[in-house]
Length: 400
Image (tube, rainbow, N blue to C red; front, side, top):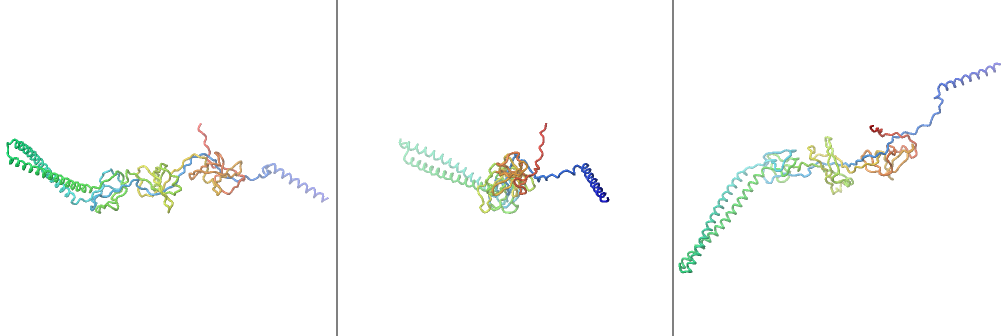
């Protein structure tokens, strides 16, 4: 009897437990759901879009005068007396930049001028004497002719004719002498004039003038020091104030540069100046593999000769389908981009074009709107399911 009671007690307890479980399940239905399969890993993606790709090549070098003009004295042996211009000054052609010591040059000019006046007076006297000699000769010639005619008629004797012939010959000799004196006096005037001009030129050269208009970028003149015709110039001028960058670039980059391409430089203070390529060098240094390119800029006081700056040259500007630069993996067999098609990874071979450092143009292999993994890597393989998470900025609705 006790065994039967125990059995009924166990069945009753089990029933109560079962009812309790059913009640809990009814009150908490979520606990009864079956666990679902895990989601594929999330990957950052971006869509292929047409962008303007501006490809630039870096350059660096020193700012130099485009057309340097060196100012040196034309006379040796003088010293600098005074400075009339400084570095950075804009000067006009013929403007006095400095003066040199004159010492006795002024007195030499006065003496040369006095000597020239004397020679001119002597030449004037010689010319007057020549005129007189010419008149005397003309009269003697006429008198001789008249007396010869009279002799033929028997009106005068041969003695009279002989006397007139002597007078004629004497007048001719005097005329020739006067002519020689005039030639000599004129030569003396020319010599004295040349000496005066030389003295005046030397005196004028003590005023050192700018041979061309421009901007002074270097001054070597020092008061009291000799003004040498060789060595360091007294002044260096950038013609018309034009200063440009003498940049160096590897040969493979130099081959892509052309005159007229846009360019820019960054100055030491961080400011930027835009210009263009003026000249691409035709020679490569065999020891370094570098060549020269000249970048021209508008006249700007911030450009200082001798400053070392960095810049860039724009060699390409195109609107192309593009992806982030890091989305492309470059292998020995070519360039690869991992696209996401129907939730799975698909590797696609692409032909790449120019790059601006952030994006790279795709010439072949992708189309606008294709979804690709934003960063190439080996964490996913072809056929792997993934959950794409776009990193592209949301599109803004067009204004209504």
